[in-house]
Image (cartoon, rainbow, N blue to C red; front, side, top):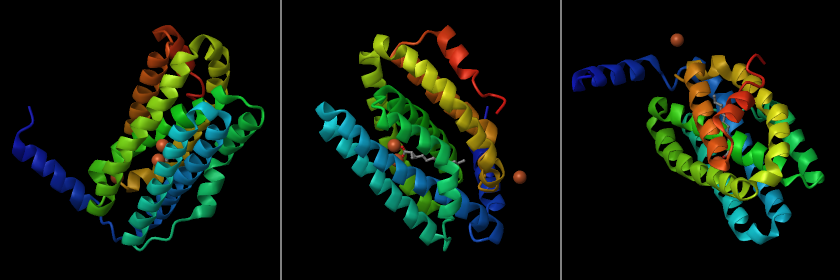
Length: 238
Ligand code: Y39
Ligand code: FE
Ligand code: FE
Ligand code: FE
């Protein structure tokens, strides 16, 4: 059992390890902050495109797109607060494969693939990253991130609800899109492992939180445990 004193000690240890103003911290932050800003910008565009593909849900999707834009502004403020310049070129490259896959799917009207990429994979990635970041964030960024993560659960829920209602017709395309895109997530996590560690975020914890959120989403949509195990195995060695 943890005593209050032990928890306080842990908390102090964490805050002593992280110097938000050190060059090491700021250098890592210039990439992670850029990834988050670019991710929010792309999420904004993705929901605008989804609103065109799903005209019946245009209003809801437009409102999700607006939230993503607010998230982007919030994380830009976090960078300014630490006097960090985000490395946007790095971040654009970081998202390029997922971006390309979304664009290709959108151009072909493959709504199921678009929803899997944005509303399941990217939202679960955001939920894992933000939940792991909150306890180790600077006080300013923590407040912003706490507000943002609540919205991300709503975005994930949108994708779950739509895919659940259209489960039988979507199943094959979902499996195919999972096979194509899940390996990209593992590669992306490996790419930021070092920088994330410097910010106090461990890769194991990120993977665990991602898999919990993603597995739960697949289950809510209608996949069996057996399906989920099989689908989760893709790209684990990427
Ligand atoms: O839906 C959204 O708002 C998603 C775009 C945001 C994803 C942000 C991705 C964060 C990855 C950070 C990696 C930290 C280890
Ligand atoms: Fe967001
Ligand atoms: Fe989102
Ligand atoms: Fe360390």
